[in-house]
Image (cartoon, rainbow, N blue to C red; front, side, top):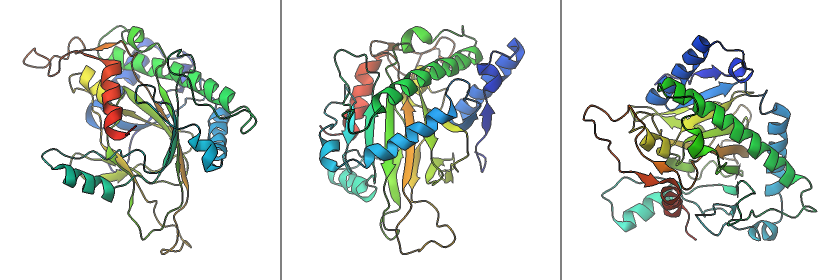
Length: 333
């Protein structure tokens, strides 16, 4: 892995200005990064997702987490299948623990890497089975409308990006669409408050994401790191007007591990000139859009990726069941 991540510009693709050859080149770049790194910056998204809307979502991130605790707790997350609502500090433990350890060892390792964050999970607002946990309009006017607009546009962006992956795999550009068109995605607002630098360096334990892709916008604070093949962690330095794209476990399984789901974590940000080394860190905020297949989608090996044996590594599985099992392992209810 290089010392810094690649940046892929999708502006011409979204504008419909790419020739078929240019589109294929861009698609191949996506898949090559998916095979080797699994993480990269993406620029040029503003034609579909305006930057002023991204900025507005970050302002609402601050306003939501500034609400009194009792109002946030009234919106608490209650179900892994629903995957909606407020997660208070310490509720989720994302750190992945290697096998062969006792329950006590696993608990100790997760305690040492305890997440230092609170989050708010937002679904697609059209699911009759799992309603959203919206704050009251009088508490945060236009919060619901803004998040729904962002959710819809990010879904459209996700569909376009997945079409690039299909093209690079010599599949029809619409190959994934019937199984990802339900907007079954999770928009997550994240808040990492100031903490003592003398405390644990971990803000979010090392883990991989669950779904197909994650589109992550981060503020200027820093702290995100991605694991290189040699086991070292490389900083994912914030870059203006980009988001981070990484691939998740379900897409890795779908591709018979041809596409890489990479371990990453969040640590305390670097000390800046003039900051007190014995003081508190800066606040960190980010906005993640976790993309998932439709709950009834069957995840089975993509044609052509069966590998040299001709037999996929994984049995077919229903996406919604797999995703809920993954969430339940991290978030007790």
